[in-house]
Image (cartoon, rainbow over all chains, first blue to last red; front, side):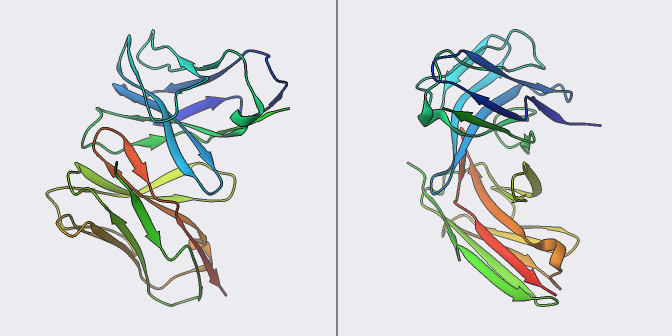
Length: 113
Length: 109
């Protein structure tokens, strides 16, 4: 089944404790991205990757890192999480960036205390 | 910067009604427009993708139209059912997807 998977689905952590949210797709997509969703602000893009070893900032990249060492995986790294990073995070992928349908993972609900 | 607006923010209709959700965007230089459905606490499910060169797309009881020149799209849902209750998100694509804040739809039996 074609899908985007994320782990963990739920995470509660404390300020400053490094964490990684994994994202994997099995559709051989070149383009992958991360979004966060907050009440009243909607979905905003954090980082994106056009292909392996090619990443760039989205609208709200501060406090996040990403890497793309393999085509199928695109982990989101929070080196020192803060409470304002409490949010619902989505990973998405598409064949290429433009013109193609984007597929979203199930989301990761992160709470930073 | 692209601004995407969805009206209404919330909508409640009785089962069986036909309804229209609206989406407007400020920059017509888009590659495509995608409608998503989001159930509470869940991920986004893609409903329809309209390329910038297309005027509409249909899938079952759903029909989405696109008027790029006026910066508008509509999602038409025919014969609504309680299972259609969800938040519907419109997103316009160029270099990234820019999302509206959604329309929360409740279909009552």
